[in-house]
Length: 190
Image 1 (cartoon, helix red, strand yellow):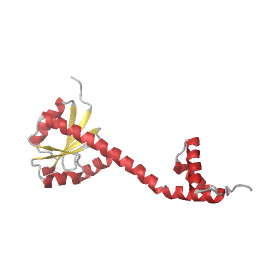
Image 2: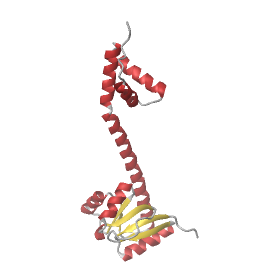
Image 3: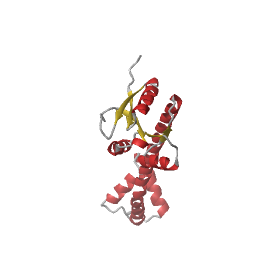
């Protein structure tokens, strides 16, 4: 039998739950490691965490896992609104309820990984859009500069920037930055 290479970290789980999870995960070919009260080996190549809400005492580890973008699964005896809200505050992307079954472990793990991937993609898109939004003033300044220096209207100024962007295979923001930093006036000679 092949040795599992992926590791799922079980955080603050009681011994009985830990044994059940280890058995289910090993059947799936996933290695497990345990950690209690922020104590244990955190240098592993971890693919996800299962955190028992009722026993939770590892806030430092959870903070590092959120920064690393790891899927976090909250484990609980109860599926109450307060437990769901607690799981969301912890950064969980899925919730596993007791009693634990083989299929529920697999389904929850896949859900947690899928949602974490979607969240990461949305966070990256949001960051890109925020960067573009912050660069809007550069576009406005570059358009205004071209309008004044070249005695053209706003539409033609933006069209020149867009054409130059495509020709040089650079972003519009980069072209606008170059125009803004350009020190020579670009007025047409009469």
